Length: 103
Image 1 (cartoon, one colour):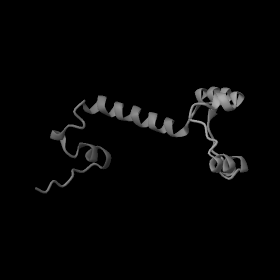
Image 2 (tube, one colour; image 1 turned 135 degrees about the vertical axis):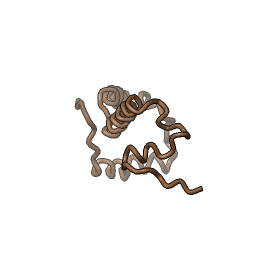
Image 3 (cartoon, helix red, strand yellow; image 1 turned 180 degrees about the vertical axis):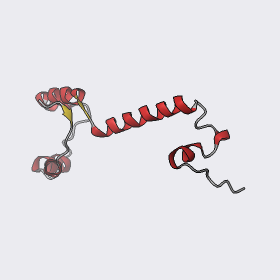
């Protein structure tokens, strides 16, 4: 069993979408509702349950870092960073100049 960040494989994705087993299941209507994998293939369901709980998706790590940086910015610049009274604050923090507020 692998641990760590998942590495998606285009070859495996295409192979799964074009398999004979999938075509037969879809055309004959032999589908089982989501969550019933333990009924159709218990060994695979047990493996997937452990795998999904022990690995992390790369995208979730990027989102986590963004949230950490955002919370850090909120502690430095105050909690009213996104309030309407401070229009253009994010733009000023990122690019160093005020937005043009034409009214």
